[in-house]
Length: 343
Ligand code: FES
Image (cartoon, rainbow, N blue to C red):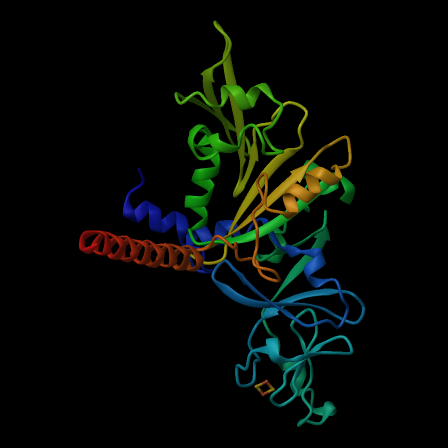
């Protein structure tokens, strides 16, 4: 159990926080490339590591990630117009390119160079493996682009989704690496879910007793969870945790592989990425259909959003509705009982 001080240290993600600075030294999955595919299309709000940013693809297809708010009167550029290689503020028309540089101030003569002095915060982006990644750290310390196996596969071999999760990234990550949850949370779907079905692992993962063994590795931890298998044998589930937020789910026989990325939106919420891939074959129609419908490590989303249909508000609504229904049924039953007494 971490202390409150340690917890605050590990989950503070702003630019001035120690953890925030560490996390900014990595490439960060920002959004699916399909969410920003159209040159001059509408800009998209991005909340990352407690910063409010705006992503857009300019006329030439270049990707920009800049401060959401205009340098003039701090109007949100989400309302702006993405046109002719820049994003134009809707209020007084200042225009910014993908580097955050102001390239036009309509009320100032071009010759006086006023707009050159205005620049918004901006982060560099790359497109890789169907994902747009950004780097928010010191430019001189920018690492090599990510080289995970799933990043280099053809699109046919990989399915990626992302969802907002109402927990900080450390809580989500901790859930991912604690393999003992499989025996309880997933026990009802081990025979049917495409992630688990038709494997011996699904049989052994039912064992409720898990013993952990952990090895340090140069890039994180190798987390082993041992359960009983056939008499005299053990079943080991090995979960790699790769700095700072990647986890790989132990494989189930020849089924597709799965992983997660837990990226902080702010200190209290995170973006949970789910990746399913097979290194040597395209994913089948059946697998894709299942994942689109929220099976395996993916979840059902409210269309056009990254919000799961099973979110806190909806669950509260559902439990209120069922409480009301239960109340109605109770009153019907009471009425029947009353009527039964008087006849
Ligand atoms: S607030 Fe953006 S141009 Fe004035």
